[in-house]
Image (cartoon, rainbow, N blue to C red):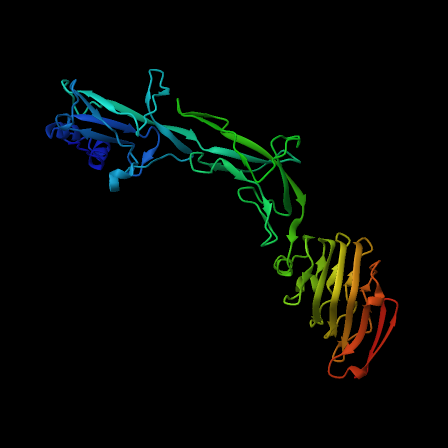
Amino acid sequence: MLGILLLAVSLAVITSCGSEVSPYETNNAEGYTVSVKYDANGGTFTTNTSVIVDSYSLSELPKDGSGKAKVALLAPDNALRGNDAFIAVKKGYFLAGWYSRGEDGAYSDRWDFSADTLTLDASKQYSADEPVLTLYAAWIPLFKVDFHSLKTGELISSYEFDPTVDGAMQLTLPKWSTESGRLELYKFPDVKGSTFTAAYFDAEGKNAAEGESLSHTGVINYENGTAEGGNMKLYLDYADGEWFHIYTAEQFCDNASVAGNYVIHADLDFADEIWPTSFMYGNFVGSIEGNGHKFSNIKITQTDNSRLNAGLFGNLTEKCSITDLSLENVSFTIKAGARNAGANFGLFAGTASAQAKISGVKVTSGELLISSGAYFATSDYSIGLACGMGSVEGIDLSAIKCAATGDAPEKVIITVDGNTVNVVINN
């Protein structure tokens, strides 16, 4: 029968150097005269030891006709060892296998635990303190991908992995999620204020990575426990700003940011969504590429009289861009009014910079409503059909109706001159 002494022996090898009776003497006395040593070789086992030893009783090993005994060794981490299994680890490295070593110290003869057997001469005398075989752990540095900026060449970040894990050699390329509208980066780095656009294998940006994934180019040489090409470089290109690809109104609202950039891929119905307050009152510096699609059923109400600008967008800055977008069944209600001088209100925007890029924007049906309960503490305010201050060229003002609302709409007198809306509320 095969006898295996595991944890007790491995611990004793490390901790009992000063004891009167060594564990090997105990093994010999008990008949375990053949030992196989596993050296973690710079790593450690989960027992916090660097060496474990399997010991066998030669007399109990089955012999063949020529008097040879053969032993099928168990890998240290083999599950057949049960709770006595040993996992070897070394920070920053992965295990290539267990090897003998030649005179030059190089690894050789990788042990195949599924096929190789240890052959012993049954007529020979063995001693447990002299291993018949020592196998060394061969460690290879973790494979790595260095992500560099295509524009500057600077290192952005690195990703390390164990190539022996299933699928680890495949790196999924970033792709847009139709569920979230966001770019799924997977293992690729997120650069604040920018959005990934492409990956290249060369610093010149000529050899692009295409498809859904790419393979790491490293190769493990199991014959001698080494590897080539473990460090791989990728050069990443990024677009300025945070971009989203939008398919639903919910996605648009969930990703609302005055600095966001949105590529619209479908008509969006906002009947069940609340238009983002950040857009309604904020300074929009991002972009919307409408691609000929429409936003419909947007209903917003101005309820904060401390804000200076309000509309679908509070202020369209010189940095913003909105193109090729239609607005259908859109209404903006001025309910609170303004307590501060210089307030501006319009269906599309409170104010619009002359440098704002607004093109191909159409209002097919819009309504600007002014409540009889609105209060204006100063006469220094502006209301416009499309824009309170500034202009938005190309918007058909005839598609925007202006009317009174509230508890006493008859008290609101409205006159319209082009884009300008004059209001008198007889309270």
